[in-house]
Image 1: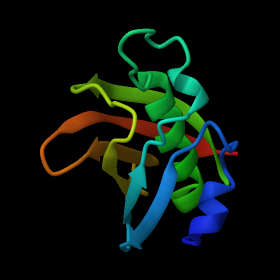
Image 2: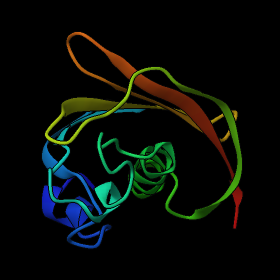
Image 3: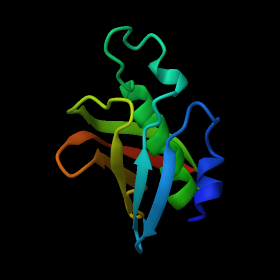
Image 4: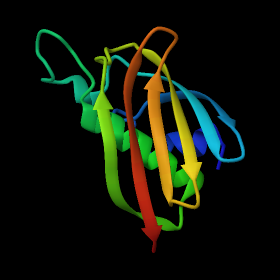
Length: 127
């Protein structure tokens, strides 16, 4: 599934990223996205300094990883999570996903030209 509209449909309107491009490799994907300033996740997180919660980054990466690489599998484990830089409203970033079929894993990395925002890896198992 590399259709941008199908990927956007994975998320509720006020909860997902604005996906603008998807580039697929054999076992990788690079997704260009913008963090909309009016996402529900910014309400109260934090009142004076809006920041995209880390759990939202994990949710976005997990949904996209499952849709693109392991749609017939179920989530098993989350490992090596690191939050490095805060994601602010209006941020433009790349989500890089790398699928390792032998290990049943998909690693993720949110970044842009100047910052690395977060990294981690999902393990999936057969349904």
